[in-house]
Length: 238
Image (cartoon, rainbow, N blue to C red; front, top):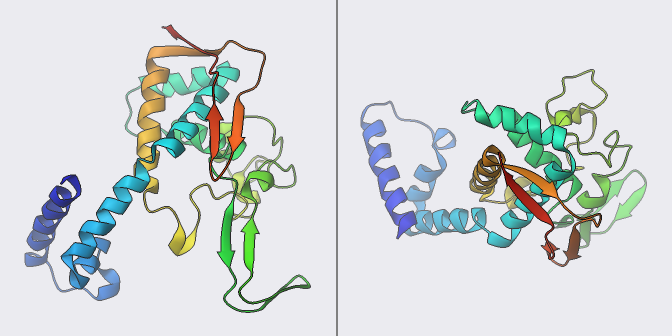
């Protein structure tokens, strides 16, 4: 099994590093070591969950298609991204910004839900215990009070410095949470991000992406926001 192989390799590295280092407290231990202290089977299960969550076909396909669609509608952004990808540099901040901006404009999920574990009073609103609280990230992320020029695809907002009106840090960090947050955040987030970055960069490096229709992309909202056919893409060789 793939996850068992990586866990076994991780155990070997841990044993090697443990033999060459001083003892660390539980708080300083890496996640794998903490799981192994509980049960090696738990480590295997968690690794499987991370892999399966990270390669969720429906979610990652929707995010990648949304990114390609928005790049097709904004050729100047596409050209800027292509320049970065073709440099061959390992770090690609503009690529990550493009994907993050697409998750803001066309998110895969419409929000998150949490159960109140006690009674709260927020800004005069009484929230009883055991009531579900919905976070409507999909709607908040396209509100001008949170993101200037919210209807525009502007990856630069995620790279802007403090003092710039577009700086993403000017808004509350919980306005946009495509992977959730806290202990219930997506366990496969990094794998999903790597998958999307790899797919988008490979396509942009080899093709000029165009959207050949005057119609907008179609979204079918369910538990996820599915992007449905027809896909009016044209991929032209560079």
